[in-house]
Image (tube, rainbow, N blue to C red; front, side):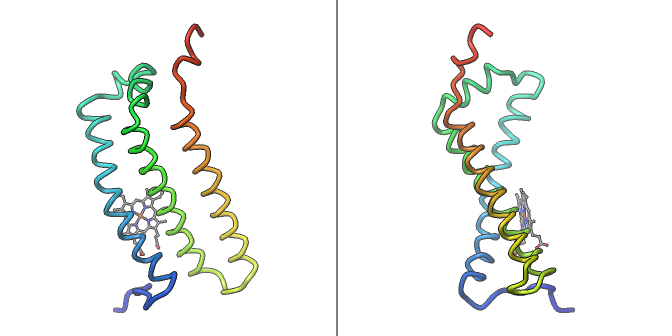
Amino acid sequence: MQAARSRPNGGWEWISWLYMRVSAVLLVFLVLGHLYIMHIVNSTDTIDFAFVAQRLADPFWRVYDLLILLLALSHGLNGLRGIVNDYTRPGGGWRLFWNATLWTVGLVFTVLGALVLFSFDPTAFAGR
Ligand code: HEM
């Protein structure tokens, strides 16, 4: 039986196809590292505000978390774009609507997530 979606021959769709695979491989390592540190070395029983504050004080973990955010969000939304393309007509209104929605969700959550990671200030909560 032939696969539902095969590898594109070139252009943006090929870049998108390749991106899905590269981001998936990177996510495996980043997410396994995250699981190991947060759930095996440490535990959700002991993770508290101080732990998170200490972790986010280190630029390495901010960049690590940012990479997971950017890769998972763009991988997931690009995967949804593929599904939208399967179910809508090229040039049609629904395709435009769903693509605009995916881009909006992507931009809003990228900005919100990056803001949390890079503007987090534990001292702002002192004395509350
Ligand atoms: C370790 C993590 C992950 C791996 C190894 C992985 C792997 C893959 C692979 C190999 C594909 C097929 C790409 C293609 O057909 O071109 C795919 C598609 C997809 N992925 Fe992931 N993925 C991961 C995480 C995620 C996450 C976190 C999300 C959501 C936020 C997500 C959402 C999707 C979607 C929506 C598709 C498209 C499904 C379809 O076309 O039917 N994935 N993923």
